[in-house]
Image (cartoon, rainbow, N blue to C red; front, side, top):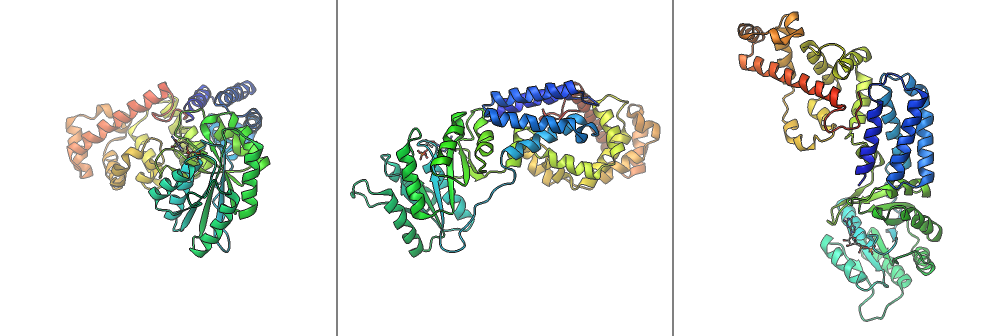
Length: 446
Ligand code: GDP
């Protein structure tokens, strides 16, 4: 999900790279591109308008014109606005003060409600709760059985009308289930209701009747993120017909364009609370607007890193290093290399910093084993070189390497490794400056 949107936004930001100041025309062009990117991703028009308007207004303001790197500032704004339309802070479940917490699920048939009910039950169980599932979808053949199968998979009991009693009345079943939950000391009751293929009055009425009967603490609207633009209309219909407190997006693992996910919270004013992203019972979690935004911008948790860097780094030094890194202003030297490492170190442990970069998850184990003293060793070696050597490491020959090794208490192999690493790093940075952005970070402009 969101691949196209991510790519388009990355292209947009790439066009801003290297610009020291943004003209009115730059801002207009960027706004236009963001608008197209969102529309192509199926984001609802009113949401797009509001989003682009907010980004544009902020882009004209002080925070961008005064910024060291306007393009990066624009990304930060887009990120913050994305978080805002996704509902802002992560909204957690509200539990009842006394008696069982009742969660009512509503949504269209096929939205993934029954699957979600079990996923939610498992998640609650892992939070130390003792949930019970209630089968009130008595319309769809097999719905009860499906919930029972799923309940068994996650080890959560299912309350359902006894078989052979005809179709049964879902409102009665729901009411009885609360009594049963109290008797059996379940602290959360998850009520699965019937869905139809399309919105219809009878369906809405039934869900509303169940709602009135069980007085839920939370009504969650379950919606398939793959249904695109329709999701917004459906959400609106459920909001009017049943009302809900939060949204659960399912099938986020699909390759749909993701506009539904970006529109629903904004259009309905109800936050997305959970996300379901796969067929496995564990493919489910709290929805974090900030992480989703980062994912869309393909930034890992780089924003936190940028924020921390802004706080920690000496701005002037940072600008100088950035100029050398990305702008081709002067040659990147061993002094810069060392200075950077010392700056980065102020941010915290290497493993923590690297862990915030996108695509670094695969190196987690190596990062955890990273020896922080390595930086001291590098520092000793670099400081044993002459200023001329630090500026131009190419001139360090065999006999000098031996002297440097002796001077720093390291071996020639260590010195060789460092010099090789430096040249490797410099080459990589030059490539980045040319190709734009860091590898795996298409959004990062210079
Ligand atoms: P209900 O009619 O709303 O109860 O929907 P179901 O729970 O029966 O789900 C409909 C279909 O979607 C089933 O085939 C599920 O396996 C599938 N499904 C549910 N959630 C997800 C999800 O997050 N990802 C994927 N890929 N499939 C899902």
